[in-house]
Length: 319
Image (tube, rainbow, N blue to C red):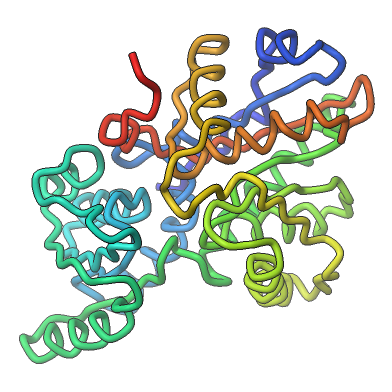
């Protein structure tokens, strides 16, 4: 079944007050979407898995990092639909993979997925070989790109953005900005596509979790153009705003700002973030508020894309 639109935004009054109270902060809880552990990829998989089923596939193949939320949700979708599932896990940080690791890594096996681990840069070759191997064995595999981030997958977030805009208009209180994590790109591109399709020009800040601003902007622009084409719309480059101050030493590597954001959301709002994506995205949100990026009285929506299961592996905040 299609994921039901989450509420347009829950207020975060205690966090807002902690930051001075001049800006009203809200959170869209896509961490509570269906499939195992919730998260943004559910919206993308709604389209991608349906295409897999329509094409007669019996096996899903995808890739991600060693604690990939996308891989967890793909495995969950496969289990739900009675499909096989193969995950190619990329060790983006040398020495970061352990077969005994908890978090998402534990859940992969619990959901029945088969995994293989490759070094940084080894995904494409491994996926190509795996697809051929499965076909030779008589399977009908369907490949889902990392993060579910292509034009079809991004439609899930175009639809979510339309819901956000419509509900805000009905309430008569639109948001002045949206802040989200910018990783594989489908969520970022889809939100921009849906909002602009509604004629909504609200600024969307993408907080990069892996690449510098120039590289991430180029990646998002490409996906935005492809997704916007499905609506017959243009994709102005100036729509893509990237904040790269929270990448820190690299993908999945902790920063003091991330730890502070994870702790603040937990202790002030009872909301769990993950250290790889939403923790750094939230750190970007807090930075923007403190630097005065928003006018007094502004209403700012943070998109919580999930990932909490990996929190129990990384445990970024000391007890």
